[in-house]
Length: 445
Image (tube, rainbow, N blue to C red; front, side, top):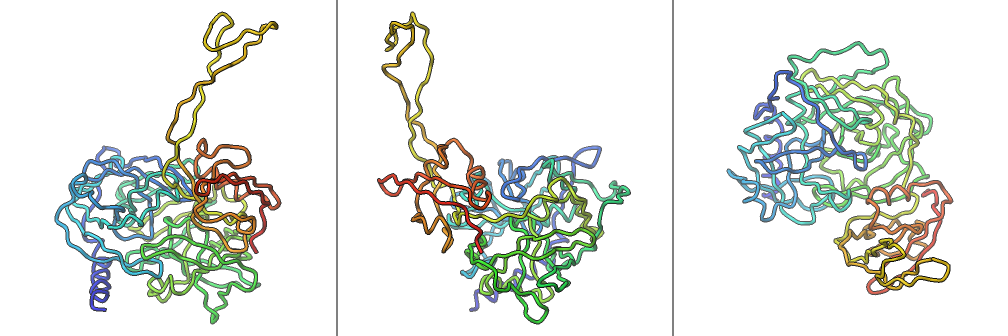
């Protein structure tokens, strides 16, 4: 109990004082810089150099200090110094995780550099988002970038543009909506409205670009935030303190001033997983990547402003995973790759010349190559995949006739978000046995 109280006090002090610490500066005459990002499962992944080492970080408005994952044996490579041990608490119902707090690190993002950056390095190989996203993820960064710049986010073209606040000028935008930001523990909140069971309810939401969902709402009968009876239980994601589960359904309408999003996905996380998040009493939930990506965004912490403009993603349908399967990278496996080289008729390389002039291949050569393996890590109860007999740990070899090692993780997952009734054919490896399964996608509730 004493350890936990010490941690909570440390966290409050760090959060409240972080604006006054280190600073990013753009090292060019324009005082602005454009940085491309990858959009993976509604998350922005940006290139970051830490002490000269090239890494990939999630750009997350919901985090106060940079966090580096899987830090075992990483101190020498990253030259991390000036460390002290403490414990961090995040979403999930598990225990706080051990971390090293380090100062005087050099962070470089594009042409923006900070030579006195604090970071938290987390121990534990299970704190790892890379298997679920399909690309290496080394950490998360948020406040320390946003507090120093006005940040334009172009979700459609997949780039951010950093501007020194003293040189940035707002343009007239009749199709934009501008919001005042409120800050609690240095994290940005926005006021919006949600229509649930024909009742329009005002909500205060954390802006969480590090979340891949659409909306998270905290159930509160007193103001009418309720999941109702039409929902399904599901895995919602990983937090620093463990996995998060809850209920999923849709809201009638989500309002951001004059912008209306019909039938938006919403998740209601279990109360045990969000006890720490609910310490901000005014908070009703979060707005995350699957809504934010429908806008081009200007984030201005200095003036406490957020500007939204609809982009081409705005009318995309809100879909759910209709299979019940969550996949992740699960190491590699050996795969035969055949050499299909075509030979001329006069070449004698294991070919037989038939009387009609057709070449017959007598001996195809192949090599063994290491390819990524994709395993089932979550399987929703009562889902079509579960009812078909699939199990956690099954390694998917083919999907609808396509070998999975030739596909990216997100390409496979995209198939599970297809139309109701679509046939899915899987061949999986379970232990030393290869099994086949067929099922059709079903509405999850």
